[in-house]
Image (tube, rainbow, N blue to C red; front, side, top):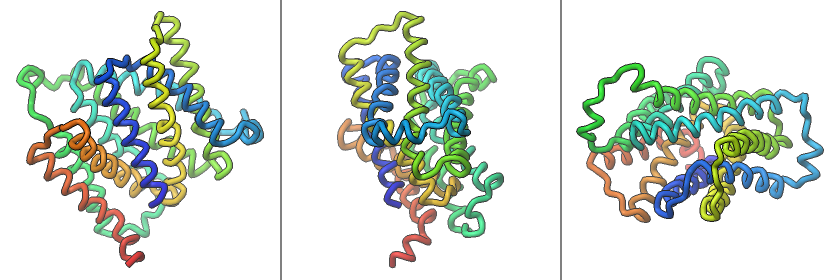
Length: 298
C-alpha cells in the first residue's frame, strides 16, 4: 500500500504540472521532451551511475521492451494531445483512464495472478471503478461537439489513446512479472524515458521545434515526478505480486480522488452532483478493493 500511495501522489503531481502548463502558457511538446531528458537524469542520480552501468544488459528482454515503450510513450503523448485538441479534454481523460480495462483483463485471464485470492467484493470494486471514472469525468455537454455522429473516424483518436494507454500498463505489468528484478526496477524506467527522449528530440529537431526557457522549466518540473511514477508503479506491482487487476483500479481511483480534490482546492474547479457521486463511489471502490488489507490491519 505504501508504494501504491507514492505512485498516486507522484501521478497527482504530474496532473498539477500539466494544469500549470496552460496557466503559464507552456508549450506541451518541448516541455514533454525536456521532461523525458530530466527523467533520465533523475533516475541516474537516484540509482547511481555505477549501478546503471553495472545492471545494463543490452541483450536482456527488459532492455528491448524499454525501446518499444519509448516509442509507445511518444506515440501516446501525441495522440493524447490530438484527442484533447480535436475531441476535448474530457474525452481524452476518459479514454486514458478507462484504459485500465486492458491490464485488468490481462492480469485476470492471462497472467492469472492472485485470482484465487479475489472475492465477490473485489470483483464488484473492479466493475464499480469504471462507473466511478465515468461519473467523475462527466462534464457538461458541448452543443457543438454533441452533434458530432459517433463514426469510426470520430472515435479513432480516443480509441487509440485507450489502446496505447492499456498497452503501456500491460507491458509494464508483464515486464515486471517476467524480466525486471529488484535491482533493475530503478534502471528499467531510465531506458524507457531515454529512448522516448531520443525519439522525441529527433522529431522536434526535424520539425524545427524551439525550446523556450519556460518550456524547459516546465519540463524540469514535470520530469522528476514522472520518473518516479514509473519506478513506484513497478514497486507497487511487486508489492501486489504483479496483480494488475487490483493495482490498476486502485491506482486510477486514488489518482482521481486526490487530483479532483486538488483541482477543487487549488484551481477552484466546481463539481457537479454527478461528479460528487463519482468521488463518493470512488471511495467505496477503494474500500472494496482493499478490504482484505483493511481487515488484516484491524
